[in-house]
Length: 73
Image (cartoon, rainbow, N blue to C red; front, top):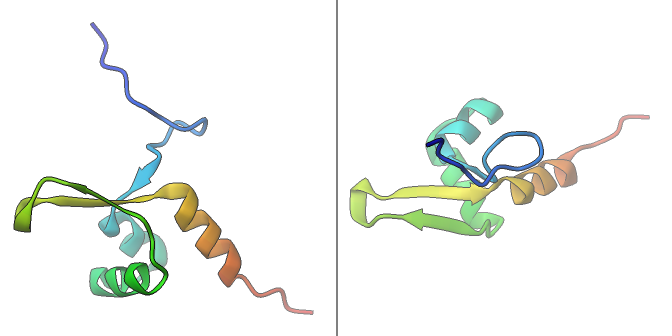
């Protein structure tokens, strides 16, 4: 039996990991954590302690990226 997952219409998970964001933004993981705290991204915490996983809402990240864009004239 095939395993079903909650995916967005683009076929991607609705969540994004800090490691994925570090690659996407070409920065350190610590920078991702700092930006996420400053911008108050909603954190989805799976598990506890050091072995727990953190994920952020993909749409919230996209909205943040859009707000940072500057159009040069």
